[in-house]
Length: 473
Image 1 (tube, rainbow, N blue to C red):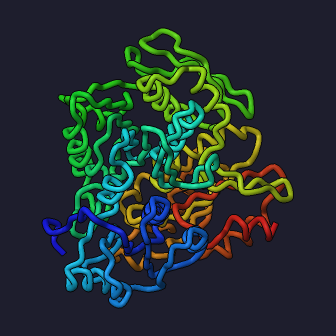
Image 2: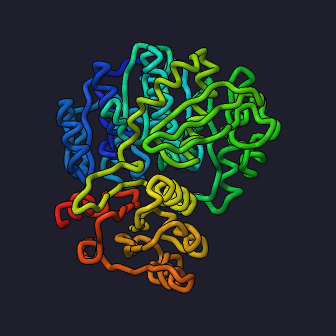
């Protein structure tokens, strides 16, 4: 396949998606089905919940990748970014000369075309910020569309096709496809962009922070004068990237003189109240059930975009109060024997640190047990080995699981869970290494006590540890 040969024909009726069970690809498949296209898909790991999600929408999914899946001659093939050039269906697509494209190209053509794109980008906070912006638009009667990398509790979905003018897109810096190694967010044409943070991540595709910044420079450089860029004000990496931007730039955060700034914050569980300052004058006071300063900053960014769209402070306040959040972001999965079990997607050292700090602030009188599975392509590499020991500062007990897919990483580059535990113990922390999920569950059942908060952090399913732990308790 050649990036110069991929295109979307004018007339399309039947569309096949390779690697359809990915979060974004599954959402795209459902949107295409809702738009009236005949949709099929394939994946090598077809299992719930995505298998049910697609089946409920009558989308046939073939288990495994085989050339014969393209025998019916689809008008277009959408190739997921995890699909290698050697994939049997990719090879067959090329052999047959079928038109093909990437997921972002398909979103642009079939979903975003004719709508005003509002994009959330950055290393951290994309999913929550995107979800909150979508909910603000919905609460304000704007009937938005969205494609987001998490299940929004308010919609029980990670996608929506609305009749309104706006579409909210989570802009991912990961590469697009094997035939297009540029970041996904470069394909979109946003009217407004939020830039939450820039840190080194995705060590499988980026060499260092400068390489990550180069991707974001490309994003910022593509924004026209009519576009709005809302950028966090306490990130030197962002400062360097947005210097000389043609877009209208608004800064948000905590710096005096920024366009949007957090004022006084009051914690009165379950509510966190905060004032928003616009150009150092009070814009309004809001309250939310989201915990942690990082979530208040996410809300602040949304306030900026909403104001640009003409949405009133009162409508934003209503949305913030009613916002139910995103699954797997500080999601309480249950409580047994007085032990609270919480699920979170945190994996980057900064995200782990901020999540622990947020949970600690929300449950100050309870013992906090942090359970962590290094699972991403970056966290399974030793690039963050010296940084992780500082990320667990707020936890009373730390349980580190051996990465379950460590064999995918070259031996010389592998992260060591045992070394992390040793570093934590040298700091005087109560930390333990576990070879598997079963031993973690057994340890918590044996030593857990009423009042504990068990914060489980992983970007994967973690062997369904949440439900298994609750059942064992």
